[in-house]
Image (cartoon, rainbow over all chains, first blue to last red; front, side, top):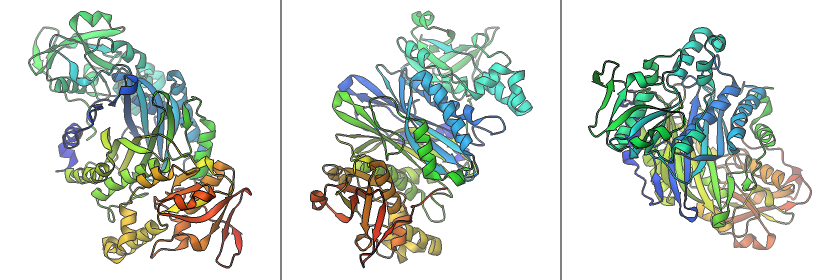
Length: 311
Length: 311
C-alpha cells in the first residue's frame, strides 16, 4: 500500500505497534511527544525528542530567513519537551546542506538557534553535516529532564480541556506570507511571527504539569490534539466552539486543521481548571468515546476535522 | 563564502569555534564522534550522537534495499558510540519520506534496524515522520552510556596507532555496485556487504577503551582519522604503508580516502599495542606535528590525502 493512502498518523500507529518498547525503564516511546526513560538513580526522567524542518514541506526560503529557521528548529523541539512538562538541556543539530549555500547562511542559522537556546539554557553539543543537493533539511535532537512527566494517555472523564495560548495564528500567518511574501510581516505581524518564530511554552508546561492529567503540544491543529489525547486515554471530549481562543485575524478552521501553533492543549481535573495560568477552558472529557463539537446555539455534532497530515 | 569553498571539515571547525559548550558537565561537544555529558549521580557518562543517510549522497535505491538502509542507519550511529568506548541504549528514528513509497518499504527498513538493534540491545523509543518529496533521508539519534570515555584528543608522542578491522573495503564495494549493480554482491561479496551493511565495533571499542588514549571511528577514510586525532591531540604521526590492513580487493588509496569502513582507529601507549584484540599496529604518534607516510623502502613523505569530504 502506498504511504499516501496509509497517511502519516496511521503510519505512526503501525510503526508503534510493530516496535513495542520492551525495557521496563521506557515509560513512553513511539507515539508521544517525547520518549521518556526512567532514571532510577535520580528519581527523575530523561526525555528524548527529535523534529525536522524540510525545504518545500516545512519552509520556503522566499518566506523564512536562516535566522528564523534556526529559531524555529529549536522552538518546535522545545515544544515537545514543554508538552511533557520537562526542562530542555542538550541539543544535536543535523544540517542537510547544498554546496552553493554561503557560510553566512549557516552563521545566521546558528544565531537563530542560540537566541532561543540562551533563553532556555539549552546547549548545542554536537550534530552532523551532510550534503543534501535537492532540498535542505534541518533536524534537531533534544535531550531534556523532568521530575514528573505528563503523557497523552491520562485524561479522565470529567477533566477540563484547557488551551494555553491561542489557535490558528500560524496558519493565518503562513497564508499571509504566501500572498504577500515578507511584506506580510507588516500586514499581519503577530500571526506571521507566530509562524516564523514560534514561542515554545516551556515554563507554562512545567507549571501545568503540577495538575495536568494529559498534555500535548499543538503541532498539527486542535483536531489532531483532541484525537491524540482521546485516543491515548480511551475517552471522548465535548468542545465548545465559542470558547476556542482563535488568534486575531485567523479562523476556527485554521484552529482545528492549521497546525504549527505550538501552544499546549491539556486536561486537568475539573476543579483545577482555574489553577492553570493563561489557560482557557474549551471543553471537557467524556466517557463516551466521541469528540463532539458544541456550537453557540448548543447544537452538538461529531468532529469531522482531522488536523494537518503531511501525507 | 560558498560552502563548496569552505569544505565540510572547516565548516565543522567554524561551527565548533562559534558555539563553545559552556556547561561544566559537557565533556565533549561539537567535533567528537559523540557528545559526552557527565552524569555525576552515577559516576558515568551520557553519550549523544546522530548520523543521517541522504538519498543521492549516502545511498542509491538501485544498490541498497530498505532493509540494508535500516541496518546501516543504526550501524553508522553505533559506530560513533563504539568510538567513545560506550554502550548504546536508545534510538530515535526520523524518516524523510516520499508519498509514493509503499508501506512494505517502511516495514523492511525497520526490520533492518531491528535485526542489528536486537544484537546490541538497542531500543527504538521514538522519532519523527516528515514528507521529503525530492529526496529521501533517514536520521537517527542514539543515546548511549559509558563508564569511561575515549576522546580524539588524548594521543601522546610514543603511542602506537592501531587499526581494528580492515580498510578500503567499503569504497571498493561501492565501486563494484556502481559497475555491476546488485550483481556485485556475487562478484565481490565481502566488500559489497561491508558497504551495504557495516558491522559496528561496539564490543571492540569497549574493550579497547581500557588502554586507548584516543579513538575514532573511520567514517571518512584513514587520512581523515589521522588528521582528526593528530589535530585534536596536538601531535603528529608516522604511518607505515605496508602495515595498513587494506581489505582484499581494495587499494591503499581507498583505505586513505574512501570512507565508510566504520572500523576503529585508536592510539595506545606503546607497551599496550599487543593488548588490543584484533588490533594491527600501523604506526606511532610523534611530537612533530606532521603526518608522515613511510613506504616499504623506508622513504618518508608528508601525507597529502585528506579523506572523504561531502562538499
